[in-house]
Image 1: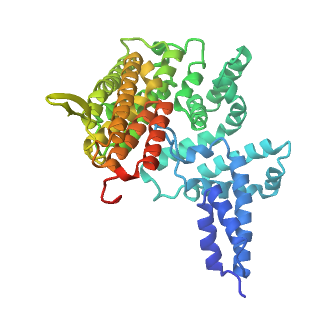
Image 2 (image 1 turned 180 degrees about the vertical axis):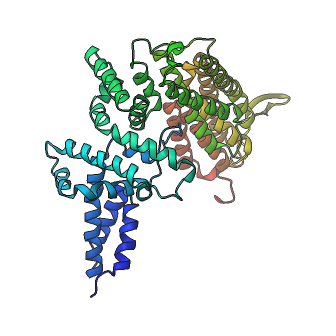
Image 3 (image 1 turned 30 degrees about the horizontal axis):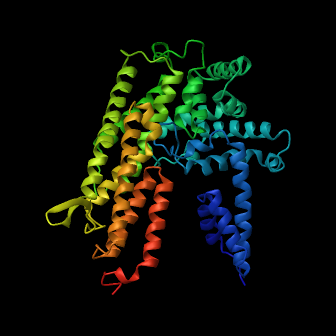
Length: 454
């Protein structure tokens, strides 16, 4: 059987360069079981491509994360993803005899990798169209090429710095801090803006953006004060975090719980927790002056988030009481007592809205401490757990007493009560409600009065 044509190989080679490593591995495993010459040829192409990606990721390791946006949305120096395979293609052309050393992870592999980065920097300057086509992100192309070349010039420093990154983010001793400051000075000697470009590279490797504070505040003995740091080239990293806090604070303040807000509530919870972590890191690492621009921005954002949290805390009990109302049942003659209304529709908008608020109340315990409302949150949560427990007890008494017309509806409401308790971090109380519901289903089939049960 004939193999792949030249056109097929060219098209497949281009597609393969766009595949991330996990997808490439999956394709290689899948193609390995296919019959035929074309499948075998494609398999060889995938194996070669996987090897080439490993070489590329080792050689360009300091810059690889810069070819994708930050998952947290914080502004960062990034380049188009399609530039990376082009950059590697031109970098490797003049160093083909050295590539095998990257495969063996030989002792001189870092030296080879640094040499390839210098070759890549030269290619960016001499053959920009081969690395970054003119039609690709044209508005940022000129500046992006200049930044890419500078970052590649600093790759050898960044490669060494990444080996110390974990120490710098933890509890660095005097020697470790000296290494950090020396790396910053060396970068500044290579380029006028070398220090912030080196920090851009390190920032790209941080999953938690707030950790960059631990780096920038250690770049000099005075960098822990915002009045000093705001006038330096490192100020941009603090500003990015503060901008991120402000954007999230606006989204949090604009959020309103509703029956269709479950998905948005999850996103706002992420925003709240991110703001809490970042503000806590700011409090610990930076001496923020109340009257400074940064201090005012942080104070405004903190106020917005705290108000939204306080409104949620205060409003959750009311929402639950409205969604799970009480009604009056006759005891004897004119005597009545309040009991759970088990005729409520389990799919009601009020219950859906209440669940959104309960989920938020139970999920912000760590953040609430940062925003000064944890004691109020805990008090409200504990009161709700008690109220829901009593509601379930009385509901099961009604069910077992034969006072409920639609047992299926009542049990559906108990399942919602159990979910509420789970959201409120009361798993034992939630398990108790679910066990009682299961026991009721098995022990009381004659009382199931719904059309389905009939």
